Length: 368
Image (tube, rainbow, N blue to C red; front, side, top):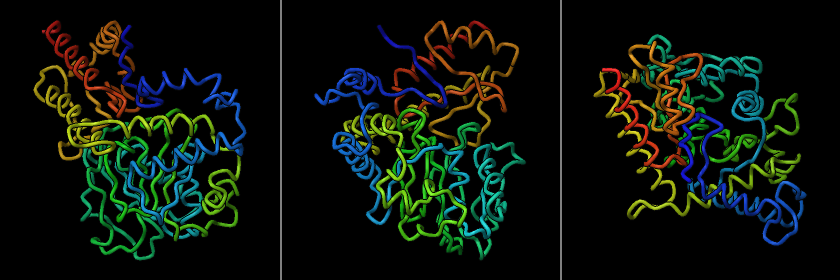
């Protein structure tokens, strides 16, 4: 039986092969007599799972040796506080606000430091990105924060900013929650990147933080010990009990990603090519439709989250009901912006996007 196609923005669909493997290992992982969620996080069985997951993630995203990979908890929202607690020194931090998530980050950081708006695209209702040349970056900035993919508004930075070219020596902090592992990362431009796992890497509960070693050891005195990056790194992400099952599931996703192929490409490079093809198929249809529209500027459209609107909103409920009968799930847009949204993360196969486009076409014909 074919499973429905799940377009949820997060927690999101996971690769079917990963779910099947996890199911087969639920009661007994590799003859240990235990399921992974029953294991001690300090036992040799789980340590081997953790070490493999960390190594696979480093290989997949080509993370340089002078960056630490931390497996933490609290999701992206918690990192909005944890990052300034570690990096701000209580000083000034600049934010580029390109949608709801960077706006949340800005507001949260203001509790721990002087948060400043370097640029915002609010005037366009977050359908564009502020040009890097327009960013107002302070000479005293402790770091510059960007959300490289806005899940709600469907806006993506296809190239990370080069702060040095902008005359800024501060490190770049990137919230890459909703497109991590969908494309390579230019680590030469990054000081720290973080992401909740529940969109592209695994189930909710795990947060991945990749931090340059020289940025650790600066936590504010009131930073909770479990959130001090240096302490977490020194203890191999086990200063407190980590989200063990989330790490295991993410590790299975990493192995699945490593096995993906598109011609001569493999891993994340293969996923980038596949994701570009999926997004182009969907955007091309929307752009040529009389019933639907996507409002995001073409140069910054997300390959992961595609918001769209029916020009006649009175047809929304009929559209969603019809989609469900076709096995196309979770297409309703975020409550803050309305409309529809198709999240087409790594785990969404091309067949799912093709099925969605066919339904979009069929529904449009019934409305003519």
